[in-house]
Amino acid sequence: MKKIEAIIKPFKLEEVKDALSEIGIEGMTVSEVKGFGRQKGHTEIYRGSEYTVDFLPKIKIELVITDTQVDAAVSAIIKSAKTGKIGDGKVFVSNVEQAIRIRTEEKGDSAV
Image (cartoon, rainbow, N blue to C red; front, side):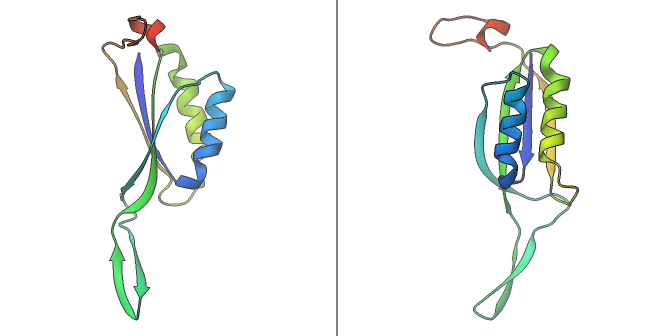
């Protein structure tokens, strides 16, 4: 099993969700997060004073899937989240040792 974590622009969430749904991935966890990478934030003017906004709003999507679904899921996320502009985000893939469904105590791929 693999865990995919994707950091994307907030307005791309629906497109990414739909793209994952089309390839049969149903479950995910979505969080509103803030951060910055190479963008380094931006400056704004408030009441005549300029200040730097370091942390930009982003969406973090987390999903745990079987090994066979990884390439399709990563491709779907990249294709649907990409705008071609700085700040499009990142995708991280890591190994998951074990998954257990609490309700039924199923383990492994069947728990996902």
